[in-house]
Length: 78
Picture 1 (cartoon, one colour):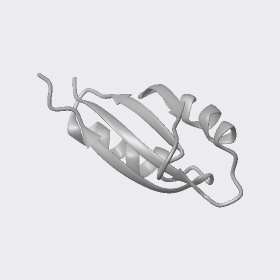
Picture 2 (tube, rainbow, N blue to C red):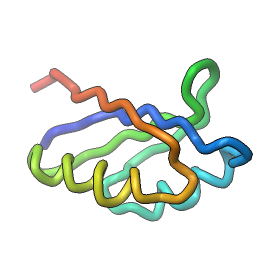
Picture 3 (cartoon, one colour):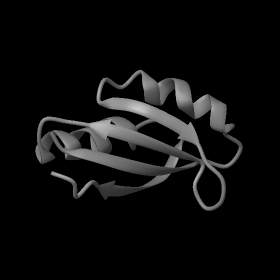
Picture 4 (cartoon, rainbow, N blue to C red):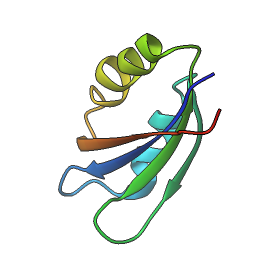
């Protein structure tokens, strides 16, 4: 099962707390945390394949009104 970490920047004016709840309502998101520095939230995603990962990021996470942009790190562990 592929795992990925999605680094998320919230839109201006959005509180980090307001992003965690909608993220955690996505089935593939297993964990989400506020972080400091260039990003606002990091979310751990577990999916059955890369196609599902792409769908989750593009059609679910990036479509949240609170999300400005994302960067995805795909885990290299086997």
